[in-house]
Length: 349
Image (cartoon, rainbow, N blue to C red; front, side, top):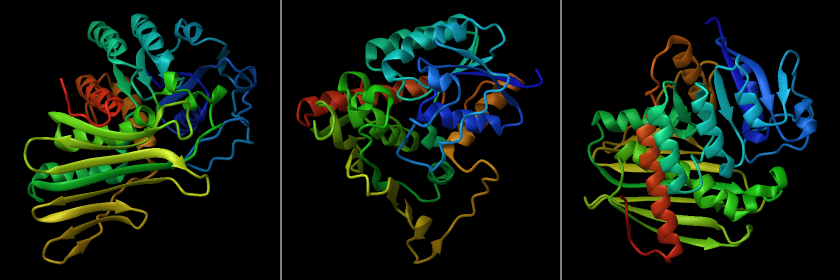
């Protein structure tokens, strides 16, 4: 194929982000979009907002030559679409993923994978039965600083991990979504499932699946009884202290933060608003050079890689495999169970 033909379902914050990224990829062509909002189907995205990035959403999307559907299932039926990119509220993921895989489409779905373990089992079976590629937007694995840090840690030069803290703190996103669905715990799963899960996934990316978790959280701060801020301890049975914190309870004047500090036997990896550095135990401080070219974010990296894999018929595995997606999701569901029981230890099965 000359270019991979993309169909995007959902033009909210992530859908419009994906739209702009695909438009800049040499191997991708957007041929279809779907959204329940008629304004968005005309390219009007003035109602779209997010918690990171500064795109001007007063500029309409250029939909010249792009077919518009009012239903994701209708877009999936389009025989010209190679990749279905799903950017809709979480409860709708499962049905669209299964339908698209069933029609022989490659599928890239935004996170989280789905809403619960029962839905995950259905998706897992559909993925195993499909002859096409499947991936989920756990984009922080592909974020340049995190990707570099993980490879460096896995190389062994830092020695064993002693302690690690991952943080993801967002200003309030109340009112930032279609029908304010993020604040509906039954749909979004709160900050625990929609925001904090990125760092849960990173814990798995760096260290593998923990044997158990303890999660403490506060709920109903800004949502309707969802866990809006959580802290988790991940038990690996090796005397390391691995933790992650996430939440979206801060006022809008506070900037978005994603950061980590990983203390190992021979040095410490640190990423925050001051940048990404390696602090070696001998006192040397190193600032790694990361060549990102025109792909500055994990969103760019993951979509470019997936498109190239489809074009070249190469199974995607640079950042994760479907099995790793499912294993990471089991951990976040264990955290949900622990938080519901006020921090009681929950084994990851």
